[in-house]
Length: 110
Length: 118
Image 1 (cartoon, rainbow over the protein chains, first blue to last red):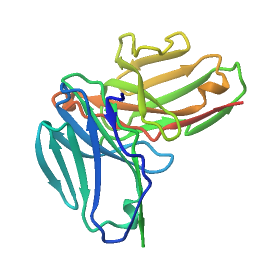
Image 2: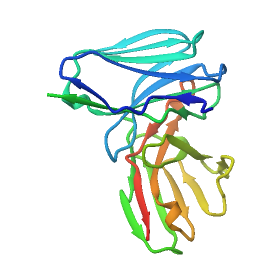
Image 3: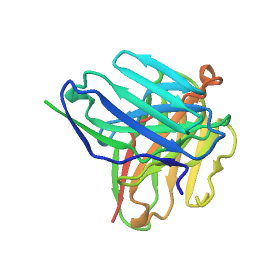
């Protein structure tokens, strides 16, 4: 079993839709949770950073962490074609090492 | 701020040759740099972690004699793939972390280098 599971998609939504992206994990030592956006043939770009359980909002993006269920989510409101990319969840314990999900490919149709 | 560059962005080489990839932090001093490999439709896999002036720490299963890492300065790390073979073809991505990110340990990623070994 992988430490981090993420549905690879692809996920296709119309412009303006609310997008929900999720990851589950098995390692209870993970405390820090991140979402990265990666455009094709580019490096990942940090979108959201969350410590422990709870919600965090930044513009159209909301990150949720439920440590009791080992489940994290990223919501994108009013999705735009420019949001089309692969979204990677990543997490770590107290050390440096990040463990990534496989990424979910999102396509927002105009 | 927090810009990381990589060079080259893509490289094609013959089997058996060595390839060097550079990773630079452009506007901050990177005390720690990381090298990842990403195969198509797979997640980023950490290969090694390097601290400036120290030997790199390699992840299990990564051959240190094949993937040579040098972190000679606070703004530059290099990854050399020695005697490259077709199975080494992949997308290599570096990331960097500076002193300001000690508490959050936030890593800033480079744009990646696509390696194709013929």
